Amino acid sequence: MNSEDVDLIERCKKGHAQAERELYRRYSPMMFGVAIRYSNSRHDAEDIAQDAWVKVFRYLKSFSENNSFEGWLRRIVVNTAITHYRRQKKHTHHLDIDEVYATPQDLEAFNESDYNKEEIEKAINALPKGYATVFKLYVIDGFKHKEIAETLGVDVNTSKSQLSRARKALQVTLLNMARIAKKKG
Amino acid sequence: MSTEQFDQYVTGMFANETVQPPAGAEDALFQRMNKMRKQKRQIQALGAAVVICVGVLIGAHVAGDPQNGAENSTDGSRAIVPSTAIMAKEKAEPVLQQEGVSQPISATAESTETVETSNLEPNATVASETPSAGSDVSFQVEANLKEKRSPMHQIDALPATTAAYDSGERSLLAPEEETWVLPAVVKVKD
Image (tube, rainbow over all chains, first blue to last red; front, side, top):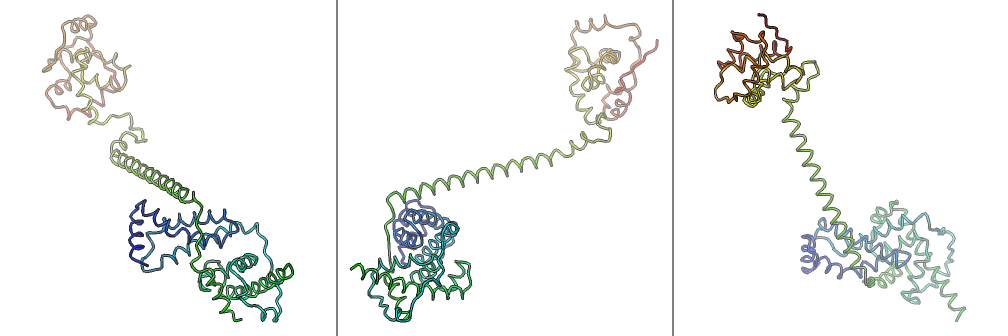
């Protein structure tokens, strides 16, 4: 963490309104990006980001400069998004991962460089919510299995198995998307 | 393709990903923050006020306990005025003397029950005849009182307690006053 951030955080801790706005402008694009990744819509992402920022300013005094500020912010957004997701959980439908079937040939034929960011993002969002969350937490946001287990309230082994299944499901989804695109082309 | 390669590929795609939030998000956030902080301050002020009020009430209760304990006793002694209270009430004596009801004992009785004053008139008369330092009893009041006197009220000798009262031994007489004044029945024979 650079000295400029340390100074900004210190001023925020002292309650300087201008410093709070400056901190918001500096980190809100990153926070909103994470919020969008863990939400179903942009509107939900706005709610998640705002709730996360309220938590940031409320608990900023407990933040230690020895830790990564960006990592701390990211963790707050993710936790807020998961809380938000749990509230809406009863309204969502989950696909069983066993419904996704991939042959060894399919997986062998998979080449990640064939897909761009939008396609991979679309494929991740097409995954069952639980698997997509574990995949995003581990692969994109760098959480450890222990942290994922604590965040989601599941066992560490569950986190590992879900990640493994999520990878396979994602590859199959991407292959299917490629096949559909070929047929159309 | 190994899982590590796939993970790295995806991670690289989303690293340092930023999305600009909508324009009104900043103002909406800080308006919400201000509102929350205002509510927090109000709650803190209210809490402090409640604590102060409770403190004052407890303080008043503790300070008022000795008096309340004497006056609020439920064993039937409430009607009995303590000697210290009688002494305090006797300090109002000069004012009552100006109104023509100058007897200190009757003043005590009057303060507790007005009905008894008619029975205590003889004592009042005795007291009015007793010279007291610094008292300005008007001549007219004196005359009116003399008109109301019946022969049985005119006594030559003062009761011992009244004499002692005038000599300044009030504290010693307080229990006696309680015993014979409060029943408020005085019979004087010719």
